[in-house]
Image (cartoon, rainbow, N blue to C red; front, side):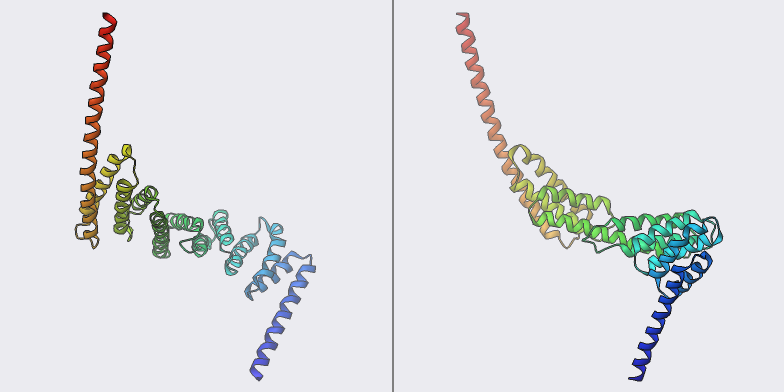
Length: 296
């Protein structure tokens, strides 16, 4: 009980001390005093209070050595407060503004890492994920000998994995909602964009399923032949790339169905062509008779 009371008293004392320092700084017109108190609050983890003070005096120190300290601490405070999108922007600005500063390399890495931390789950908007990949690559290009390069490459792989999963799941939604044309395009794009994806084999099978369904069950006669051939081509590609696939049996069943559908289509097309030829012959005879009547 005594320990709990002591801890509560200590926290209350620290808060009072922080507030006292902050209030003193807010009333002061001495920029150096405000800078010193801001640093103290920063070190104590009172980042919101430190930020207010740093922002108050930042323009007063432009062109001085302390300007870099303020800019770095503002970025770090936002990072520590989990304002990752802002800290990513601020760290990048710091690295660009102070390229010779001993903290420039870490700042550029923390900029990329901020965007990495801001990257959401795969099923949400991935703007920060793309930004994180770009900034990680920018860091690697700028500091290729850095000790952070190996980790940065691992983060890039992880982030790309998130984009792969999102692309795969979006394509699956098209498939599950029977939007087969869109599904086929989406799965093909996913395979092209992520050729080394762990989802590649399954994505190619989904593409085959989508194209086969579209061709056999959802195509008008004028589109059917081309779509059947596209589905057959997809089967051949899948079988060539994955001859021992766990999906081999399903792919072969689809191929059998496609072969039957192509055979049925050829029969229908032949009948249509015969009817067309007969009609054309009839039309020629009618025209011939009309021409003879005109001459007579």
